Image (tube, rainbow, N blue to C red; front, side):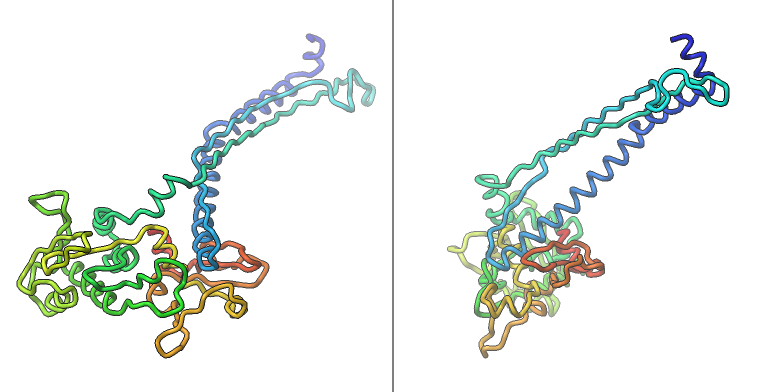
Length: 342
């Protein structure tokens, strides 16, 4: 071995040291940073794609299916080897001199383990089928989400005003009612933004949600009239009891997440061929005209386009290939991206 090291010389040893230390650096902090970024990006992308895929499935009345990434682990192993070169085994003659051929190299072995958990059974019911709690709506508004988006997406009915309740399931054949509800929610959004309307927990009973009018302007009077509330009242409790209707409570029925997904699915743009073949339902109004979801109801919140090209749309924020076509949300469609994030 001593003769081997002597033949190897100082420069050869320096090269091997650099090789080893460089290899160790490649699995140090910089390697962790790179791996973390790559896994984070991949999971975020596939989560967006899964959500879009399931919304599209509902449009075609296909069963949705959700998988959760429950854990990600990765083991990395760094190995180095040094020994006689494959073409220079032992002493060889080179221009009258004797040299010893050496090969030194390193290897990194990655062993990622990703665990997926299907969302099903009781867990699926709790997350996807149970109505969104009213307290969650308040939390979303306090977090900065507009009242119009929160109420428009998550509330199905309030004080008898229907927000396209027929659209909380598979695409209806007849145009749903939503116009009066839309006017009321537009007023709520305006008054809330101007601090003429407050929504919060009751000061006496912190378990109850209360809507409070701070003024008696024209918009406030109109909203009270639409909701059939006491025109002289200022505070009204939120209630989910549909058997106790009066002019001092706001009787609210919220959608579940699954119903929200159904609601959004109606606004998906699909090929006319799929309509002609009966793969999707076409909604019509009272006059028998085709109802354009993209301009009304759920179309206000999201736009999902299709492309029959085999290549992924270049301007897509997220896209999935389903039924031999691409469905996607445009990257510059900030309204749709906001709803998707919501």
